[in-house]
Length: 620
Ligand SMILES: Cc1cc2nc3c(=O)[nH]c(=O)nc-3n(C[C@H](O)[C@H](O)[C@H](O)COP(=O)(O)OP(=O)(O)OC[C@H]3O[C@@H](n4cnc5c(N)ncnc54)[C@H](O)[C@@H]3O)c2cc1C
Image (cartoon, rainbow, N blue to C red; front, side, top):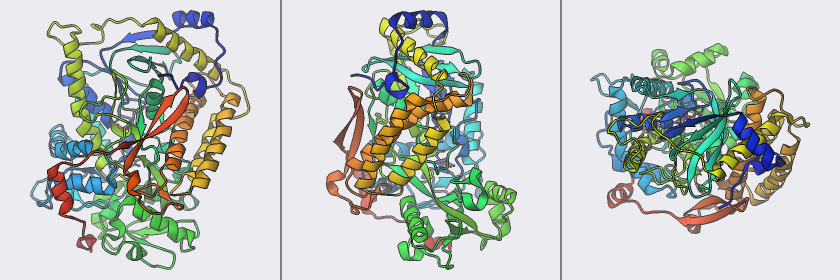
């Protein structure tokens, strides 16, 4: 297996072997760990806790301070079939809803694992101190979320992700799990078959770092921020995880499936800084209604039964169509209104939304919000075995939004936070068992950073040296194109060519434009040293371009419409495409392939045959 490599992600390599080996010996810190967890959102934190509880001391790293990961932005809730409000709910129906809304290209094993594990994971978070909202009789409260048959979404107001990560970080700290802040990984050390570590740099000092380990867990988040209208923080979700995995020899799946959330804030109304930022689905879950500029509650035409709480792809396309056909607001959105609800209820259930809009001069207890679809989530990602986290590369594991499998063609709200913890636990258990059986520091005590002792092979040393040389050249890049400009152009390209509604012609034109952008990487201008924001963005350009190509190529290959992937030239579901599309690196080119999906278990098939469905009118 070859690599998608440094030379493709940055400008051409011209370092000599001599300069490479001098550099590697001169300037880097080498850190030996039994397991390296790249990413400290909910997924990374939960894997690390499990490893520690099984006697392994992993090192967790992230691009930001401890507790500051994209997970903190998750708002509306996390799914588990607790049955607090609707006792007829069950894990089988949770799995059936997930498969149905994933349009049956999810990995049924991953789905069933998540649905089955979640009640226990929620009880565990509760025990660790997460302050879930309660019913009057003290049960964990549950709200409606789109396209789910029952009230299944547990929450902490509309700041569920922040509460969850706070809880996990506190737990990790109580277990003394080491965390190294502000580290950016730029390459995994891999011969395509086996991973041996990772390289990157300290974003505060600029120092180069080599992590030496047989077990690397990628928990580096998704890639929806590569679109220019998106709901993520600008500096998160740039595609680092999938791009690093692909480069190391792992496969990606279903990269064409990008979730466009129906309700992003409208920049023309609230200012550019707010453009695309999420208005949580909890607003609709608590009864919020959508109106067009004619005052019509238009979801009655698109989905009379499920109304505003139909699946995200259905509601997003409906809003896009209203706007396209001239029934949008002057600012290019539609109205989302929850003012018919009691003021106190809104303040209690949606405190963050109330506060955010109040800071912009809007009282959502009396006035509507202006919203339009925004790129929100990547259903595709690294192909893993959900029971172990294993990828196609030995020693490389992945978990969380960086992976594919659970959500298929369309994610249910509340299922992403669920996936992070439900899959992280068995993954942590598996890796711990692997390390323990390999006999590192077999004195019966914990395996700690100091106790592991490995050296880098020549190949890995060369890879690390190549990477450092490439990063040095990037730092010195003095061309014409700033990273901000390239990322902005890439975002617009994706929005225009691989947006909510796509055609083969537009996708092909998008790929042609992408090839031009890829050429312009050679003309990058980086303003500042390795500690600068400009340098971080310059590294992200490489990751984002790689992921963008996988999205465009996958979308072109999938000549049908399914879930979040809507092709105007192939508007129907095609049974031939009830398959996953895999992407791998073959001789520095992307290779696409199709793969059959698995079958649900009999228990879940029975739930599917039960045809459970949300009755929106419960909310009226
Ligand atoms: C606005 C918003 C609201 C949401 N609301 C909900 C909700 O209510 N319910 C729900 O289920 N889901 C929700 N989601 C989705 C959910 O928040 C994410 O899918 C989930 O938090 C992902 O967690 P993660 O641990 O996989 O990744 P993240 O939380 O994104 O963490 C990624 C980590 O990787 C690190 N990292 C990335 N690249 C590198 C690198 N190169 N080197 C080193 N470290 C790196 C980052 O610093 C970070 O620590 C929401 C998403 C958004 C954007």
